[in-house]
Length: 377
Ligand SMILES: Nc1ncnc2c1ncn2[C@@H]1O[C@H](COP(=O)(O)OP(=O)(O)OP(=O)(O)O)[C@@H](O)[C@H]1O
Image 1 (tube, rainbow, N blue to C red):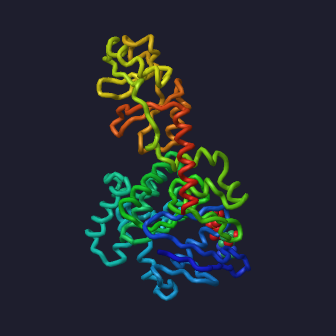
Image 2 (cartoon, protein in one colour; image 1 turned 180 degrees about the vertical axis):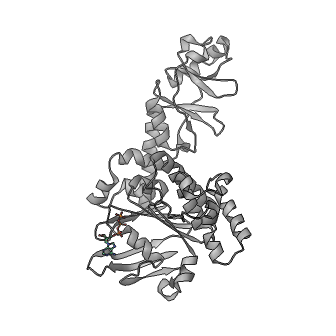
Image 3 (cartoon, rainbow, N blue to C red; image 1 turned 45 degrees about the vertical axis):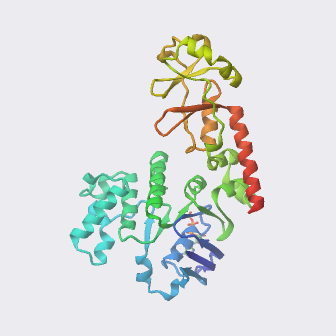
């Protein structure tokens, strides 16, 4: 665990970049420092690897004051990733990644072997190994930056706005990759960003900072969204807080119905036998699936059987039951021409459908449960 204890940084010109900041950064999780430009995020991050020395206060790692450790030993345990990756332009990709192992005295072959292994881990094609940084896209360069930081297998990764310079789609890919890497490798990651959506997507804990290096709130993302500490945090979180918070509620508790789900080869007789069951859920349409159970589209009951797959009403994008959130389920229902969302399993087979009302009930139940947990905890 990294413990920042009442740390202040006053620059020689008198600027107080960080003001009596205290934070406990849990092991093996992602802690995000977020806030407007100039609020002291980078200064805080750089104090952790002693690129900047605090004016007051202490930083402890696993109970040991970092001031009492040689800088080189400290930094060996910390990968550092910055915006635009900061790669060595005259070195190939594989040698960029192998930099730290080589400095640690590994043989060229062993270091390059490790670098190639890491390229796969961060989603880079092996064929890029002998290219130079300028021959890679911005997103690929950022992946190299992450691989390079991981090369000596440090327990801690410090990341300063690593994905800020790439477009939103590439950025989303890099974020997903980071979450996957964190899950696989269990690193302790401290991540700086000015983008609150990125903070909410990545953070196990999020520290919202305000100008002058003050901590405004330190909480898990769902709690930030439900209970911002003050008007500054609320304003910084932006619009649609309620909807965004639904991302943290699982769809697992949603009550689905399979009554209006029919396979394409269902006969009129079979359908008639299910009439009462279908009427009971009052679905406006039938959801037609192929013979493997994969959804094809919605069909008015009077047009079935005999509906042509190509003429069915599109069901839009389904949500994966239990894996996707209530936000995804609600989005599905809102976009669906029938107002009903289609739930599928991991293989894409329909496991049921849910109306907007049912999703509304699940949202109410999830909120009530969370409130109960908050009171208890
Ligand atoms: N070497 C320095 N000397 C004086 N003031 C500095 C120095 N470095 C940073 N500052 C000031 O300290 C404050 C915090 O800077 P810092 O770079 O930590 O902020 P930040 O939150 O990372 O900002 P950004 O999101 O813009 O990168 C700012 O007011 C900045 O101008």
